[in-house]
Image (cartoon, rainbow, N blue to C red; front, side, top):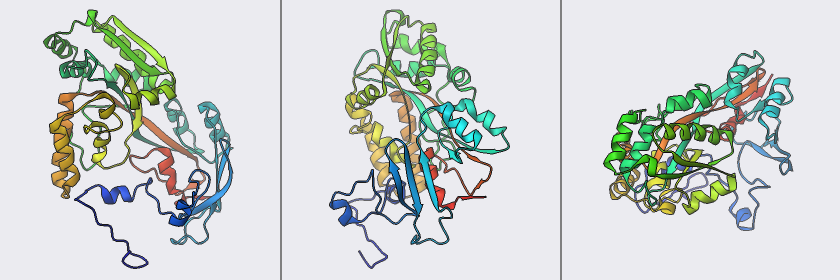
Length: 373
């Protein structure tokens, strides 16, 4: 510590995303003595935020009270906030429509257009979560990158978007850097091209009719609706021996870390806004995909290391364009689409702004700016 208001941090090597990660919602300032004494982060708060913990009942409600000592005056405006746990979509939407709650997150896409027409409600929508199909490069036929590329061409993303998402999703054309991001490379690689897909399969020596595929999916509608359409599309391409196996969410989570799958549909969001997020999946030591399935590429590792250690943003953008290009060549996943994700408030709630690229619980971190008429 340089002085009471300045902290100096010395890194072993240049790390471009460090400051952005330090300012992210996952990085918090807490009392060191409290934490070392066994402070429970799930049931207690110790920090400098705009709200303090109020009444808490696990799985029922979570209360927040205004921190009168908050450093940034005049925030927060609200005296208290109560979070209610309402797992069922239809019940959660009814609570918003009747005014039982002032705000809700995780708006199902089926409700978005209806809520937008309601003069008593304001809707905030982004495309921050995405669906992909993980492919295991250690299990045939996905041990050949041409087969993995082929699957990306055999999938009709527009049909999935129209049938399973009411046209509200956005098809992926390359990797995971979203449009509007400073590093967005504007690559248009993936498209529905069954002729090219079949040609790649032929070059890889794969006969679709003789190839067995075990396709895992949870029973969650955000996964299974896509998966059923994908099965139909692959059957149309000649894969008559494809089995769709449903699993529960705990099993899905185990498969992520064990790599015990041939092909399975998954959905999540970016772990942080910096394109260094690619490392958690696709560096050779990436814990969330590469390491469990033994995926490794020397060129990709070098580019990811270079992207992290380069400080000039324009140079970084060029590096991550190469990262995305390399990923389209390796095709470790079938990149499907960006799902609509939204929050909504009653019309008398002001000051709420949706954070670009943030899930609901991250956007609601800005509640210190919100007031109620």
